[in-house]
Length: 294
Image (cartoon, rainbow, N blue to C red; front, top):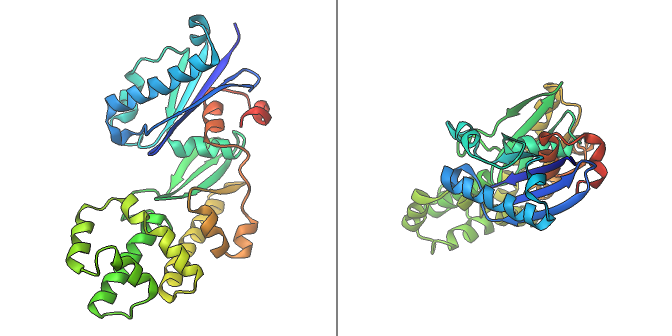
């Protein structure tokens, strides 16, 4: 019987799925809404079943072929207590189904299934490293205690500066004025927002911080330079821990790259594939099929 491989990248905003044959040839790909542990286990399972069934249907596989699929799913939030065990108890119609974090599959994809590291800079930040076949992470412990260099961290720093500017402890800049404008320049409204704000809410200020930094706003530049320093240290640590390669990923990575030192940028590698490629490797697809994965 022909072997098939199915990979899922289940994240906070979208869930993507890809099905290939044993040679790595694309058969179908589908995308749906959020599918992460924060939704709750039942909702997560429903989302995973829906996107995988849609992908299998799009590929035109029959029931017997479905039972030969080897699947792997990288899921945001799977490290939460009890999530992995619950997922392993759910029923999927495949020959095998394995689970890991979304960072693990991103790392496998970026390095063709081999050793290496990815530093993911988005709303949060985390480094995922694989050395001698063993995976571990650096950082990524959650906002606000961690997530250094991330969009949420940029937003938090911007809010701190804006509030200090409002009460006169520091000089207002165009950045602080733009931030407090969202709250009618009213400290009480800003505090009420902060009582409910999520990392994604803080991260919504990141584009503003980057734009004003590029326009030479003094405070915005200091915030971005501090974030760049954290990213530099991440990368240094990745190589100190033995990674042979490092790729910079995430929604904020392109914006932050010009703020890094030239010698740091020179050490970065371009990703060979994406997170779905990594999920397929995790499922067991041989690395020789890399050229047809994306």
